Length: 294
Image (cartoon, rainbow, N blue to C red; front, side, top):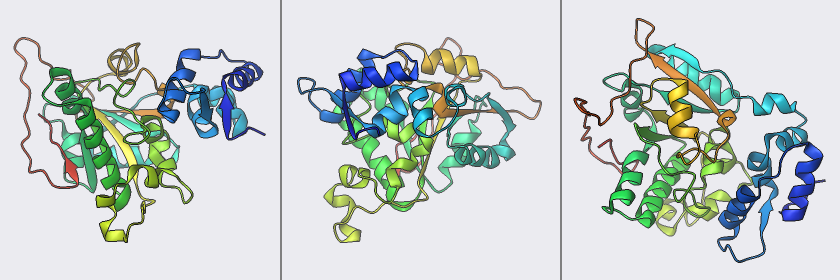
């Protein structure tokens, strides 16, 4: 039986029994995220261990073959009309869709903007903090608000990364604002289970005025990430490599979906280099659409 709380020695022992290397730095990061105090006695929860310490441990707990859990699914190449079927298949497989759409009009983002969604402009949040036009605290609150609006109303949280690699492995993750590991695992489904602690942790008083003070999450909630990078190798290099925004997340959590044009090609993402042109969207902001691409 795996206890609900594990210290470093217990995690080392469990990793050894699973035949995987214990990652001390990752353990400390998770313990700090859980306890909020790096000087406190380090421990992680059973749920953190299942989704993050190692996929081999996770597979043993769920009686699934370890190699199936560890190995990322191959990218799925689709045309835009196949987008809904593609991300529904990812949801059914317990994966979080990561959609790559380098088309000039970024049609996937446009589709989601006019769908039942709550949009987090993660590029702008990260850029504002980096440039000093906004703070990390403001960015975390914006991320929390977008997340809570989606959880309350059973919407899809669309994390719009555009041609950036937002800092989800560093400051843009917090257990009381945006628990990124839980958000990006199984399309965020653990956040809205019947016995989930997360609504009580994430909802604020102003989020519960229409529910008599109760933090109620809708089971239809789920999560999608979108990017303007064009290939799986681009995604690996610019999103998952060391020091990149998703470096702290196993690629096996995600289903890469690459939107091709009608000729079966995926063009380069628009960047900031010489001669490039960046499209700007100035859509009206509603309480459920937190930020637009800038």
